Length: 182
Length: 202
Image (tube, rainbow over all chains, first blue to last red; front, side, top):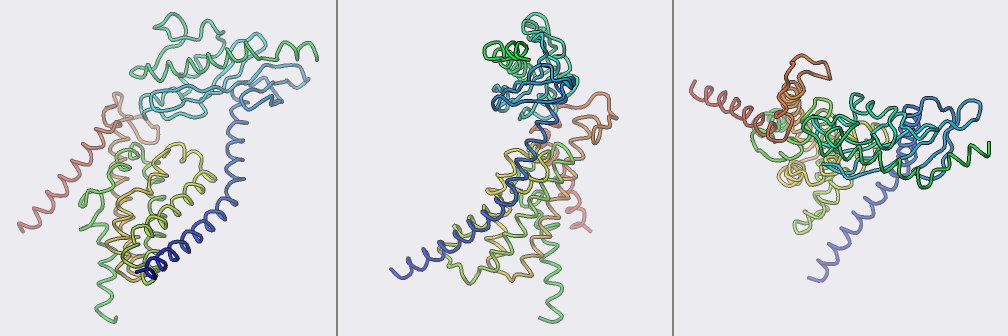
């Protein structure tokens, strides 16, 4: 009986060690690539949401300053997230020097395919362009953004995420200071 | 071995496609089928990840047959399967973030896919390495065929076209939601049963 238990334990231990070793090897190989992919996606997104900018300076994980070719401030990039219908919706927004939204991009979402995932499409996101904070709301709540038919929760969450980003800039944005410094 | 071995191996391969098709005949592992068969791209990606895990789980489980006493076989299967699921998760994240985004939680959830553990328990644990590999191939092909057929139907009717080429003006949104998946699977099962009954009559 005792030897049996010992033998089972030993076998499972050997197997676990082998599995852990295999995972460590694969993790070591793929981790830099995974990071690279995430960075690439965000770099690409930064340029899309703020085409006027040429160089980005990261202030923290969710906030970057943007500069044009001459080194003048070209706006800010902010990331924010909000609970949607199927999970967290993570957005990136490009904000110009007048604190107006230039463009937004959905970085992550798990909304219903065919319905809520419309928030990630051009038709929906381009509505945010040129709007300032008071206009960032759904049309059914006042003025602003047309919600996606049948996906009001997703649309509203996206709008609120953008709003959250703008609020962040209002509170912590360094755009004004940089303008003075440069 | 010899003459009788060949048809047996062919049978091992064909079992998962026809008589033991995991989705349409055994009706197991339906959750990822419903969730991921909304577009052809997702369906093929899921099938590839599934095939990878099933191949290595069958291979390793059959290799470890002598090493694994009956009493601890389930923990052994779980360790083997979860290791390969984690590996494929890393690989997909590294090479195709697009696919990772689409498959979402269903990629790590392959770990609890009952098709894979069923093949380990019912086949790989009792058969040779060669048979187990063929069984993995057969089951994967069977899974892939069903996934592609379902996703073609659902993507076409649900979004109005294939790979964003729109043909139908009024897509049937219902088809892309989970109930649409059930309906499609049900209809396919009906077609299959119909064919079977017809054959039996003849």
